[in-house]
Structures are given as structure tokens and as C-alpha cells.
Image (tube, rainbow, N blue to C red; front, side, top):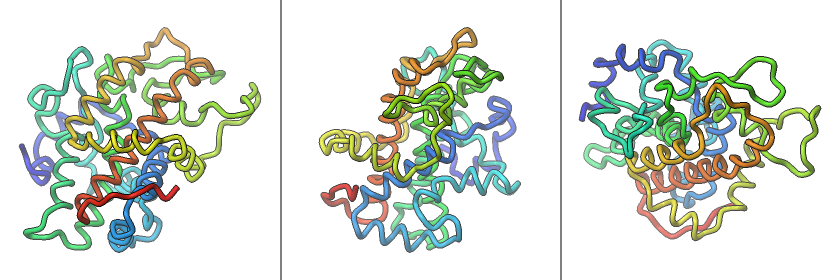
Length: 293
């Protein structure tokens, strides 16, 4: 496996050609929700360690830190070489991820593993600045790897090349955008939304609380058993194959949104719980804990 430093200098041009306009998994609302949810599952000791590392203005919470690779790094050319590591293009017909076939020059699977190893290292231990950077990328990449179309789609570009109708929008939307933003914006609410109702505000606090409230301790424990990046990618591959292989002939409407919101919600829940567990194991000794929600 190449080291992260090696990826930054090798194979980047080829990887970018596969996914020329890197998309933002879950959008900022989804990433913030994952970070907020994760923070609620951390032990007090792990929270203190995270807060000690996150000191940059605007990125001093785990929710905001999870957006840093999109809201800061994407706007600064020195991080351009990281763009291919937000996703992996697994063969849509494949039963599972193959590093040789799907990730020869590095991808979200290998990048996530490298940052987890960096944050977990004891000899030498990472500096405070290295811990901060690792938390930014881990928080973001765990969100990315749980967005099904950051793992596979038949168009080979994460659904960004597949345009289709979305609710009453005049312009067609990409399949990727629909799973990043659209299904979160149009999630079912009570009372039901009318045709002229505005899309939901980007309130990640209430969304995270809602997801935590609907997540049983037993299910959270089950989610924690899948922490290897390759296993997360294989799980998202199956989710994508079953639910997210939209085609240009389809139209996403309220019925589709209602049917697939539970899938989106569970992917966000998995990402939040697993992010908390990865940080817990890297920063402190694992210990039984309860959600703060």
C-alpha cells in the first residue's frame, strides 16, 4: 500500500480523470450531522481530546470539522491532490471491493486507513496539529464512504454523469446530487409537505438528535462491529446496488424520497456511530458509554 505522502505525488492525474468534478458526499448538512451525531457518542475523555485538537476558528466542533475537506481544503490548491481520495469507483457489478482493481492509486478506503493509523500511532505519537488534520479527514471520509454513490454507480462516475428529474425542479439533477443533498432536503416530515412547501432548512442539530433518538443501543453496538474501511466500502456497495443505481429514465418524487429516506438515515447513523468509535479507539482506551442525546 502506498503511504499517504506517496499518493500525493503519484497517480493523481489518472484518478482525477475518472471523477473530473469531485462531488461532495452528503453535502455540508449531512457531514455536519455525522459529526454532531458522533460527538454525542464519545466518552467525556474522548470529547476532551477532540476539543483539544479542534482549535481553528470555524472548525472547532466535530460537526464543522467534518466539513473542512470540502469547505476549506477544496478552495486551496495545495490540497488539490487530495480530491481523488473522497471516493472509490468500485465496479458496479462486482460483489466486493478490490484494491487492485478499484483503488490502484489510492482512494477513500486506503486514505481513511492511513489517517486512522496516523491518529492511532503511539511511536511516534502525532503532534497536536497532526491530530487536528487527521480528525478533519477521518470525520469527512467516514461520511464519504457511507454515501452509497461515493462507492459505486453504473456510470463509473458516482452518478454524476446520470441526470434525471427531481420533484418539480425544471432542471435535471444528477443521481449523485440527489443522494448527497436532495433526499436529505426532502426527507419526510409531519405534517406532510405540500407542493409549495420549502425544502427543509439545514438544521443538522435537530437531524442528529432525531437520528440518535431513533437508534437503539443494540443497533449502535452492531454498527460498531464494522470499522475497517474496506468493510464499510463493501457495505455501501451493497446499499448502492440495492437502492441507489438511478437511471436517466427515472424521476425522483415524494414516493421515492419516502421509500429511501430510511436508507439514507441509517447510513448517516452508521457513519456517526462509527466515527465516534474510531476516534474513541484512536484517542483513548475504549470503554462502555451511552449516547448524550
